[in-house]
Amino acid sequence: MTRSVSPKRSIKPPRPGYVLEEQIGFILRQVWQRHAAIFAREIGINLTSAQWAVLAKLTETGPCSQNQLGRLTAMDVATIKGVIDRLTARGLTETSADPEDGRRLLVSLTRAGQQTAEKAAPSALAITRETLAPLDAKERETLVALLSKLR
Image 1 (spheres, rainbow, N blue to C red):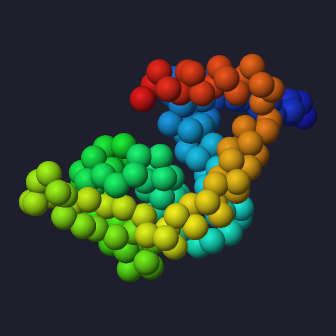
Image 2 (tube, rainbow, N blue to C red):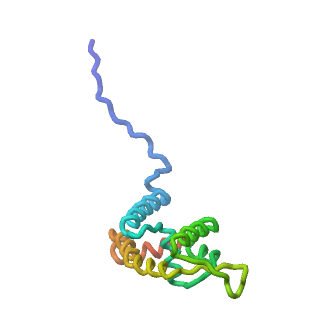
Image 3 (cartoon, rainbow, N blue to C red):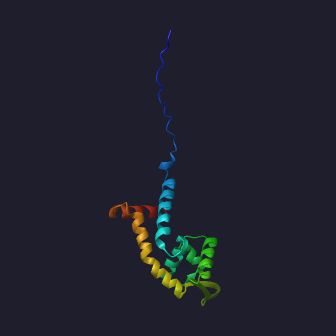
């Protein structure tokens, strides 16, 4: 007696409640990785994104305390100190006593820091454009507004 063999059917496992590719953290990390790759390729002057953030913010604000600069650039105390130390070692920033409070140091751009920031600004704008290029103008506006609400 021969037994008929039925073809194997592919059985899909049940859909898990947590699908990694659908999670906001995973998506944001992938988007950040893409943006970081664009940044590294385009900035062209050997700056990290944190260093660029400090140069850009000092260009906007002028001299400010390291503590305030950390808050303005969303960096914790240890991170902002390390970034300022590296920028100062490269001659892009300098510190001086705050005339209103001798216990506080002000961080400011050196002339070389100002020139570096001016040189990098068009590239930084291009990086933003390229990062957002897959979106139309309305989608870009919506994305920025929604992400700003999540801060």
